Image (cartoon, rainbow, N blue to C red):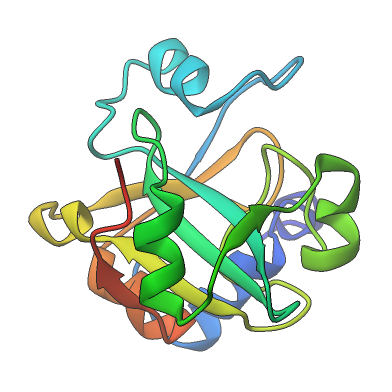
Length: 161
C-alpha cells in the first residue's frame, strides 16, 4: 500500500480493520455538503441503504448517536425512550467536532472521541449492507448492519417518525 493510500484512511476505517470487519470504501468528490439525500442522489444510491448519523444530547447531558436512513426523520420521543432520556436535543453543528472528532457530513458512529450510546434504525436489519459516512467528507463505508452494531456496541430500534 502506498503512503498516499494510507493517508486516506480514517479512524473509522482503522477501527474496522483492527476488528477484522469486512467493509468497502467508496470515495467521491464533495464540494459543499448539503445533506445525505443530496449525496445519495448524486451517487445514485438507494435511500433505504444510505444512513446518516445524528448526535444528540439528553436532558442528562449525556450524548447519544442515532443512525438512520437519510430520508427519515428521527422521532425525538421514541429516540429518547430507547436511550432512557426524558428528552433529546440535536447537538449544534458548531459543536459536532468538539463532541465527536468529526465534521458535519463526515460524522460516523465508528471512532468518535468517546464511544457514545448508539442506536441504529431497525430498517438496517433488512439490508444486506448499508452505507454510512467514512469519517470525512467524500468517503463512505459500506458494511453489514450487524458489523456496525458490533463495532459500536449499539442496538437496533424504531427511532423514526
